[in-house]
Image (cartoon, rainbow, N blue to C red; front, top):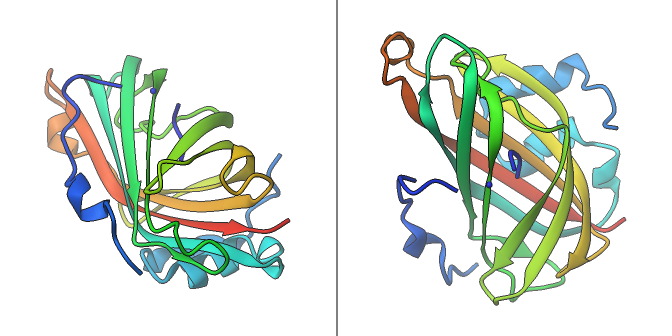
Amino acid sequence: MLWVGTHPQLIPINQAAYTGLQPQGQPIMKNTFLALNFFPLSVAGLLAVAFHPALQAQTLVTCPLGVSQITYSPGLTNTPQMVYYEGIEMSGPCVAATNPELISFTSTFSGYALLSCTNFSASPLLGDQIFTWNTGGTSEWHYDTVGTTTVGGTTVLLVEGPISSGVLEGAQVEQVVSHVNPNALLCSTPVGVSTVTGPSAYVFLSL
């Protein structure tokens, strides 16, 4: 996904639940944002609206049930400050039409940015992220954030880009990721908000 780096106080997600499971950008149109009122829906429904031109290609892998978590140090407050952020993403179970052995993946990311409670989703428009699959194989994703909006207290980002090397090299990746906006009361304290979490959905497509 998205922001690019690692924090020693990262709150663990139940990784066991995601291991071995079976199973620049174009302008975003208004109807894309309207559809996000219902996030999370099925990944097919969301991405069909957000990335309908790409979905004319063959769907290789669908991972609709991911989790994205980002930890900030220092915590986010109402005052913009330079913050170190670290995230982890876990996706699975995935459904693979052509690569049935691919059933889940994890990814980590980190970096520094000028952030606040009202601007906590700021991220590079372009970046690279490594997916580590349940098979042990990896995919390097070169991503581009093509849209962001706030719906009902939740910030939603639309991200796309190609797999530049590794498993599924040459495939196009489309992602919708959602994070609940930071708690306003905590934002007004010196400690601030240290973590945001939300659902994440991926589709891997042939070009």
